[in-house]
Every structure is written in C-alpha cells, then in structure tokens.
Length: 114
Image (cartoon, rainbow, N blue to C red; front, side, top):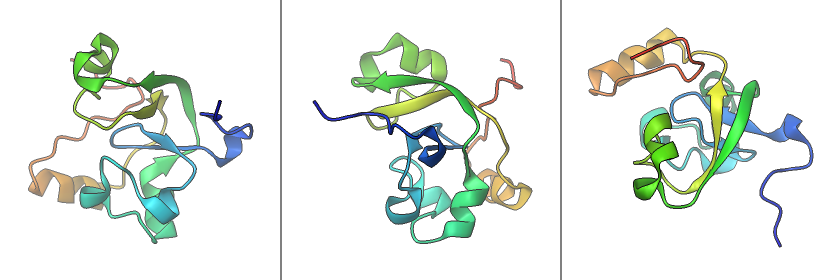
C-alpha cells in the first residue's frame, strides 16, 4: 500500500486557502487553488501561501458526500489529505486580489467563527 503521509512531516505543507496538504506545491501548485494563488514554480509564493504549522488531517475520498468535508468547507475541492487547522494568514495583497475576484478568504486556524 502506498504511503499517504510522508514520514517526515517537515516536508509537508498546507495551503492557507483550502488546507490541502502536500510536499510538492513548488512543482505542482495547489490542486484546488493554483488558478487563484499561482504557486507552481514560484517558491516565494509557496512560502507565502502555505504553512508547515497545522493540526490534524482528514483523508477526503468523496468530497460531495462527506459531512466532514461540509463541516470543514472542503466539499467542493479535490480528493486528498487536508489539514484540520492551518496556522498563518495569506498576505494582505493576495487577500485583496482574492476579494477582487469574489473569493471569500476564511483563515483556516479557527479564528473566524460563523
């Protein structure tokens, strides 16, 4: 069976917009957010838009059918492994760009309550 999580968590980062975890944001970007954040091949952008500080993970196989995905607001995203909480914020200029494009940014650290 293939290993889902790397043995070294240091290599793993989580997207600050969607909380997808990966070790290859530099080469592949974010499967959910690359059209918005454009991280592929931009190490500085990866550092700004991802965090190595996160808690817990969810292995998401059927996003539209999962109550956990709805609870985490990831039910419209790709299958994958997602962080439950991601610490850090997207830089203000990127947040402004998202706002201009009609994308609501909700920090994934639990600081915003609905």
